Image (cartoon, rainbow, N blue to C red; front, top):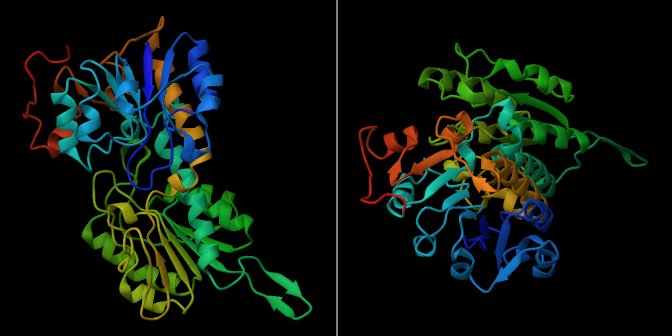
Length: 389
């Protein structure tokens, strides 16, 4: 089986889908890996390292794709890149199906079997494949470093000859993977941390990290299926926003992480809440890519509010730490490949829970239910004559 690893070309994307460490394991297992020239350079992985791991280096993406049974990527391919992938190949990546359902149609039209890393079910069996979690960990960590960089105060309490400096107060909104990592990192830096989540079940996890859990009764739970948060009703969101103004106003740092799969991020930090914060305070909005949790967030930018609060809405934070982000993502991809490979060949069982959850397209059709709905309903067919050749 031939696996192609192209260079990522999206603006700001510095990660690579497979790193030399994982390539060596795949090659040892009997797979052939072709890596595009300089595919790992931005992440700190040289062509020489890939060659030493047993890979072949291709001069460009089209050469890497030639004859490949599997194309392993971080992000989705452009239309131009799709043209170089053979029919019947398996495309693996963070393909953002609900954010760009039309791109999934194009995979079907090209006769590809597309596996989205972000739609793999969050089950115990699939933990090693959970790319959302591996990358969210990095986002939560980097969010705290950004906040510490912009905050004109120390994070820890300091006792000096000139007097005592009080520790910074941090509020983390959302205690999923990114939020829990943000809590742990802020605590390591010495901040006094409070966290809030609509899912009361995470309170013990928050407390185990040394943070206080902020309790707000909104009249319903935000816990959804598969370990994800669900969207609250407008009434519950209104109660949540009102109750949070006081807590936000008392914080030096606020980090928001609330995202709903396939939906615009909910607004949790209103202009009123931003106005309640002291000048010099910092908000890092990890939901900026889907619109942001903060009124005033500018995706991709750091802006300052009228009262002097810095709102950081940088995108794709995992790509700013590409060396380790790539290592973790490559392990996720390897775990998926190991799971769907038997006797050196792909064996995609459509009745398997993990395979079914990850598969967007198969045999010329869009088979992922949520994507089909986004395209216009479950009765929509994108069957292409001949299917996957």
